[in-house]
Length: 433
Image 1 (cartoon, rainbow, N blue to C red):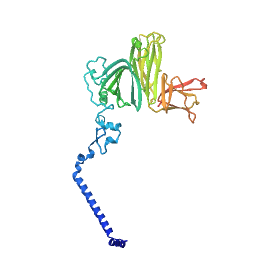
Image 2: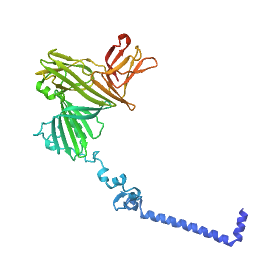
Image 3: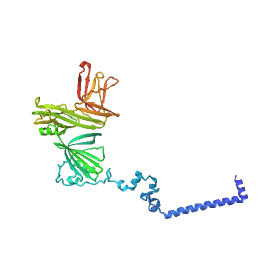
Image 4: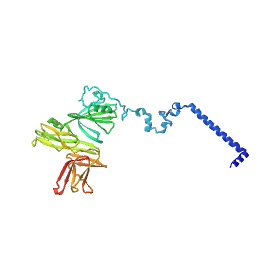
């Protein structure tokens, strides 16, 4: 191969000229490239790249509005009607800290002396002066209000009734941290909320339970402050004829609270006349809704002292109302809430519980809610309703026992069979959780 190449090189003049010309071109091209690189590096020092590089200058969009630094023209790369394009043009209003969820600037609220109000002054009053609630302050002697909060990892919904104050501030965002500090300072209990633009807390007093529901709105924020008259255990209260008449079986006069740890009864003295008594509540938690419709009539010509031991038991609030019966309201009654023995522990929550009944023929066992209660429970896109005046059957296990899958609470378990002439025996306040 070497001898052939030498022979061609010596004998062919054109081949020698072509190879030499190609070598000259390669050397010349390399020299030009190196010179160009060295020239660019001298004109653009590394420490000045950010200032002199034209690729980092603002590039105008198709409509002439500057977007900001971009190597590729940013506006031409995205649709004009897209969210990215909008935020790029309005980043000073939206892409910055210190804003609430509604885009309002967070500011420390102004506070002042309480001074004189033209409505009753609420105990929960974070701003003090009525004038600092810049839009509206209203008061309602009888009004209901719904709240939502999280407790023990479960979301609860409740309806409350009592005196209501509506306090509204325009333009400013909800000062969440300010309100949390205020609630802590006055000794209130703060509830976690399912919304980051809402705060709920309550303050318990010897004769009242105060609630505050603070919400951010598109126009600013508002406070709904509600006061419930509270009846504490072991204290006797007098309910006048005028109060019972004003209640009219519709408007609650006061509230009692149960922690769910003690069995509660009510002692009532009625010197004359007749009276109809109602107690109610509604609470929703997780997949359940629980309703109470307590109703009883007391006659003074039968007894002057009554012990109400059939009120629903468990954690919650009862709102009490009174009405005449046959047009013979008593001149007054005394009301005392009493707490007795401990109740079985129930953990409320989203998960259902179960009861397994052994030793009875299948089909004879049943469950019921407590008297005056109605429970609605949803599981797997199916909703079951349990009424206190109905009996509910369970499922048969392979061993022949009866299994009930139920929402959390205190329930009644019974058995009915032929040898009892189809009568029944029941055990009450069975815990399910």
